[in-house]
Length: 165
Image 1 (cartoon, rainbow, N blue to C red):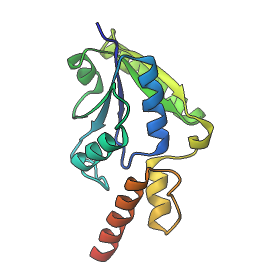
Image 2: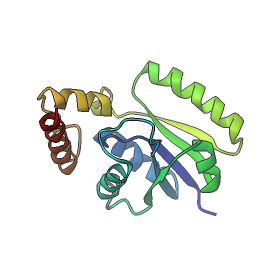
Image 3: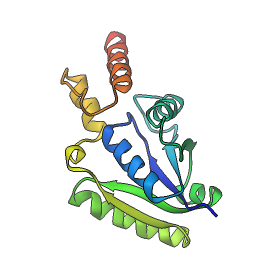
Image 4: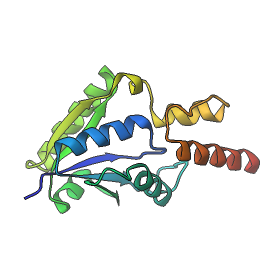
């Protein structure tokens, strides 16, 4: 039986930090499912379909990774997909406190699913999707934090929003 892990997130947009965690998880597990949260009640810059498509493009070349959307409890998604683990990246101490609480809740909901916390590589330790969007919206250069095609789409989307205001 293949050991499958789930890397969940909103990925709005996907960053090099996300891709680093996904690639590292792909070396640990037989298969990695990148689970894109599609909660329609949350306001996102990119739609779920756009985020899924960008992740599929960004993960080309990592043969044991597939991308899927999910709505609802992450643990239910893991059980439905026969995943043995949830893989999350940790940027800083605050992340650990939050992720530990989530891991404990997830363990109570799906006892057979472990949580694996991977420390973020130092070059990505301060990068978040929210920060990338905020800096880009004010004209800052975020090209080093996201894949080139994501950067192009980010700037285009921000320009669309600015024109619509």
